[in-house]
Length: 217
Ligand code: GAR
Image (cartoon, rainbow, N blue to C red; front, side, top):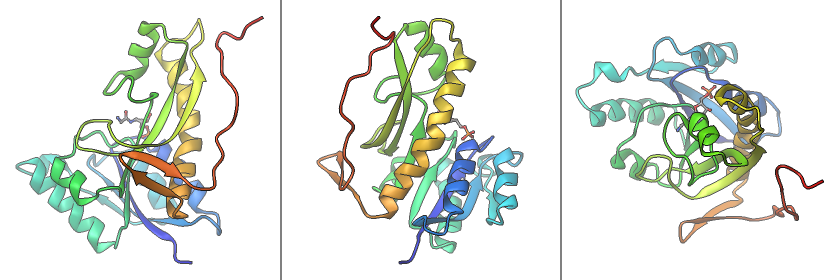
């Protein structure tokens, strides 16, 4: 079967991009990354893509008058590569309702919290400050509001007593690298449907049980 053609949008380090590249390097992975676009010319993720022989593009938002013209340029690159699904991977620009509508249910984002809690920036600082016992990460279809939309996969991690934002971020990031490739695989296998703004996944059983942190003694 033909692989789903994916475009990945980044702004920086690109460790989630790397997780997707690594997953897609397997012959039986059902998606392929056909283009990587960064709005930041110096993004380290561009080198990761180049190393994997994936075409890279810089579309610098500072070169455009407004968000629409910037996004027109993004769409030109995505169309030229025949992209079918767009993955935001640390893409730190807000997108317009027009862009979200153009890619309805074909635009996926990863966010380092258990959405809908802790949308926005400085997530881990706010999580530690709030004193919650669990955090995690979410892969979701994007809707016209920041970090909103039907949830595809989440992973939870404990927030430990000694955590600060960097230690928690590292624990969460390791799970982002697991669930983003998983979510993309489920989509590419045609197992993900959005029904009344909730995601239904066929053929994936939810694990039983409860998580308690700190664990009862
Ligand atoms: C990731 O933690 C991702 O969840 C976050 O930016 C980081 C990018 O890291 N994205 C957001 O906060 C979006 N709201 P990466 O460039 O190494 O993948």
